[in-house]
Image (cartoon, rainbow, N blue to C red; front, side, top):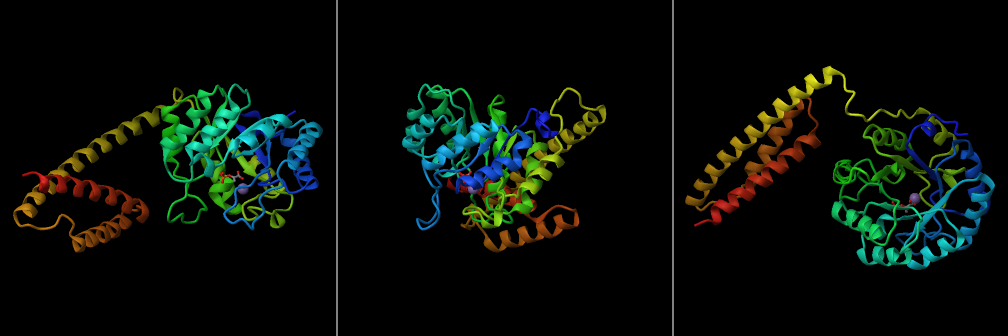
Amino acid sequence: MKTSTFALTNKMLIAGPCSAEDYSQIRSIAEGIAEFKVDYFRAGVWKPRTRPSEFEGVGVEALSWLKEIQKEFSLKVCTEVATPNHVEQCLSYGIDALWIGARTTTNPFSVQDIAEALRGEKIPIFVKNPLNPDLKLWIGAIERLKRVGIENVYAVHRGFSLADNGNYRQTPLWQIPIELKRIFPDLNIICDPSHIAGKRELVESLSQTAMNLGLDGLMIEVHHNPKEAKTDSKQQLSIEEFKSLVKNLIISKTEENILPEKINILRKEIDDIDNKLIELLSERMEVSDKIAQIKKESNLSVLQMNRWNKLLSDRMEYSKTKGLSEVFTKEIFELIHEESIRLQDEIIKTI
Ligand code: PEP
Ligand code: MN
């Protein structure tokens, strides 16, 4: 019987170590989390590493350990595949589900090769987002699997690699999985907070955010002795931390038809403000067009760096007094400025 309140929800829960290191390691972890009856026990068997000298997983031998876990704890097991050979080995061992890692999703040739090896199979496949924030590439990988007949394809949001990831290992960019859900409402999207976080202190809060946004489940890295883990030691949760995370999670309702009337009134206010914002933006672009005409007549360049520097710092300064974050203001004004420059450039080019 499922014991956690999380297990009573319709959310999916996948947990287990980053890598299968030896049999006693995965057994201790499976035993430690057994009470949660997770949907899948995860463990990487072939690990994509940045440097060849790093631990690259034990390979096929670990598939037999996963079989033992499957039998002893009646748990479904899953692992990462990156080549058709990995797929064949997993199928022959009866692994219950597979995931395609972020580095592999980035390469359509690899995804297609994996898809061919899966043609006609029934096994569920989890597709992590590509490292770069390219929604189409993620969708493409999902489509390649659907086309070979995989019915249960899940998307996994594991963060994106940006030049500056701030406090995260990989930036969440929640807007991307939200857009994926908007386009494919029936696609189940789960979150892997461990690879977003890169450090265990952030995993619980990211998991709660994923639930608050209505994502369909979580894949969390758990280790019986995280500090000694051969891979991703900083982000794996101890068994106790995992238990407390799952027990503390609040799963909110996503139904849109039971909203309190007060929300509808406030939403009307938001709609009006948004319309005003659009009108103001349009007015701003018109002024920018007038400036473009003058720049053209005076043979001045579109980009005036001193003006742009001053504008940005003034707006950030002012927005702080209005309680807005600097990152937010910077992004908004970079977008506005980019559009303004694009329009001015078009005007200057027209004869
Ligand atoms: C993993 O889940 O261990 C892993 C390597 O994931 P990703 O492909 O998201 O980096
Ligand atoms: Mn990992």
